[in-house]
Figure 1 (cartoon, rainbow, N blue to C red):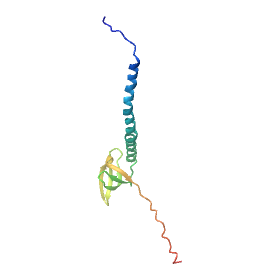
Figure 2 (figure 1 turned 90 degrees about the vertical axis):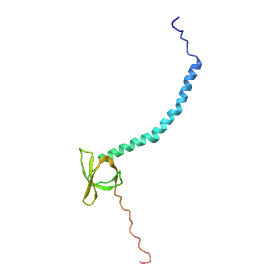
Figure 3 (figure 1 turned 180 degrees about the horizontal axis):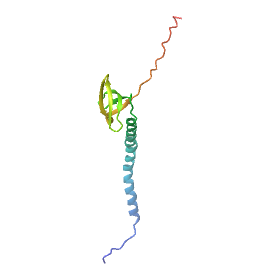
Figure 4 (figure 1 turned 60 degrees about the horizontal axis):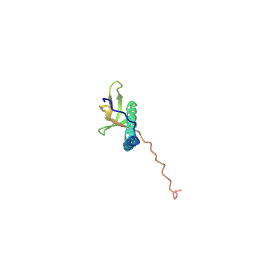
Length: 120
């Protein structure tokens, strides 16, 4: 006979299928943990950086990848270059991708000095 007979799957075959699914459960759990703790936050950070670089304008104070602080003087829209003033009358051209952050000015919360009670 050239064709072997086909038999119905017994209960042991079904248990073997369930066993293989339980072997993959820890791998799926590990992937889920990696996604929510590592991959997703990194994607959100990249989206924020891209939006920040797209919103650069003249007068923004920036930090480059090399740690240089400067003020944006000119943003070239068609090119990937930004002109940054790092000292009075000293301008350098940097790539937009090397800018790591925009420094926001912090408002001073200085309170008025308290008057001495003895002086009044």
